[in-house]
Amino acid sequence: MTVESKNLPVEKITELYEAGDLSAIKELLLTLHPTDIARMFEELERDQVVSLFRLLPKDKASDVFLELEDPLKEFLVSAISDRELVEIVDEMETDDATDVISELSHEDARKVLDGIKEKESIEVRKLLKYPEDTAGGKMQAELVSVGESATVKEAVQSIREKAKEITNISNVFVVDDEGKLVGTLSLDKLILADEDTPVREIMNTKPVKVTTDVDQEEVARMFRRHDLLSMPVVDKEGHLVGRITIDDVVDVIEEEIFEDFYRVASLSVEERPLDPPLRSIARRSPWLILNLGTAFVAASVVKLFEDAIASLVILAVLMPVVAGEGGNAAMQTVTVIVRGLALGELEIRSAWRVLYKEALVGLGNGIIVGSVAGLIAYLLGTNVMVGVLLFLSMTVNLFIAGLCGAVIPLVLKWLKADPALSSSIFVTTCTDVAGFFTFLGLGALFIKLGLL
Image (cartoon, rainbow, N blue to C red; front, side, top):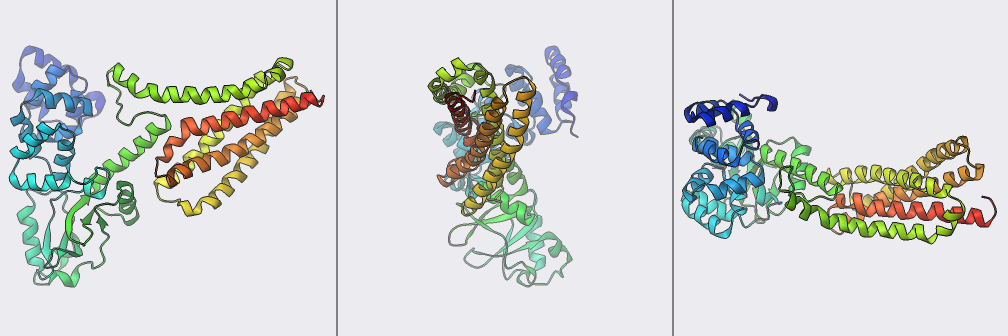
């Protein structure tokens, strides 16, 4: 049973805790989903969290631990004993256990690896060697595999034997004598087939698979493209080493979405709402300082035309309009390009087509928006040539915004950097500099020619 966030019994739990009625708290916690318990723990005092966490059965405590935000996880690791931590990790599947252990100190990781079941410890040690953002780092060792000479009856028996320790079984993987993947068999085919049928006769001999070094974003795209529930992971020689399930991919998609969202705002992906103020300051200030430097670049352009601004104050009034529209137009382009790159809809080889298209879009929008801006300026009582100036500078700046919004994320992708980094600083600086230079430069020219 899952309860809505607004109905989480935080006040009830607090009352029972203050009354010392731990048995009632335990009974209440057992009715809640692990995700809801984790959200509730975020609202409680830290000493309460430790006491309540210890009331949970180890299997449920393990599920709750995985749902907690990193700061609270770190606190719990420091607050509970080594034995308790080992018992919690021992309940996890190997991919989750690997994620948790990889975040521990070297000493704590060693204690946990030495304390959990030997078989699981061996598998986790293997998984720890893979980078976290690759297929190897996301896979789990738990799976059901049979030899290609096995029958349907033997495959079903293998599922029954492993069902208690493995969740989300959707496929049986078929391997040869060397352990190389030769096919997959979905549960629906397995159930409908005669029990004496050899699995090699009904298996999919061309399964969608991935090697351990493939990036997690590509894994997510493959799941989406082929509507998969699970996918086998093989090494470079083709040996079956693990599987990735849809729940792992959902986590990857969420992680990638929020990573891009944070990058757009020039934030560290590690920052959380309840982080201590000093931690947030340390993570945000470097980007703000970098942004300050780029802002001074834009300001230096304005300084070049201070004489023109002094002779015609309306230029100072209108130049934020030009720069602001350029920034908005560039962000529209960046959003489309970054999304296309993230979903695999856009490749570097298509760069020229994209640049041509976005340049035309910028030019078209510039003409439309510039015409409207010039008309508004005229209706507000400015000189007709001010409207013409606004039209020309707006058209040029939106054209440049379209190009910058497309070029910068593509270049960053080509350099194997995160394209989302392009938005808040690089593209904004580009459009500010271009907008100020175009508007004020044309303004100075108009003044020199006696048009203003």
